[in-house]
Image (cartoon, rainbow, N blue to C red; front, side, top):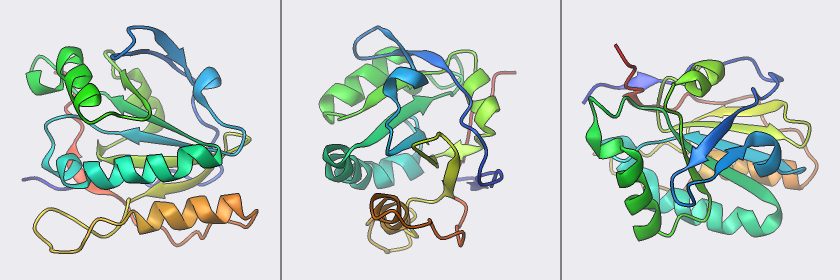
Length: 185
């Protein structure tokens, strides 16, 4: 299983706007309607990646813990579904319903959103403050498939706790590691 680190784009980067289809509702959703005035977590995930599968339950717990506190979560799949049919919108919808995603699961068919965010891997995480300026990019926590470290979400939890407390987010951030985004040929 190839391991690709996330691109650590500069903190303070403004979130690129987008409008994508939510695979569950079938409706187009824009960043401006989904974002929070407290903080917004944008996650590039997919269905088939073993790194995403490894952290998915912890990720759902994280979202369920912080959504009631005013944090918005947005999941985006940008993979080439012709080469990776497990990541098709139909299969995305099945997974979102089966796992009861508390957030939208958007399909980036053109891969333009992944390129705008310089997303490199799944999972890849970005946290934007209420002004939609990047305050965190990197890993959920130190857990990886096979390393026996439990999934806690500690890195993202620390960033979100700092935001909620009105404190600066630590700039000591580690890249996420996962499967590379499956780019179209």
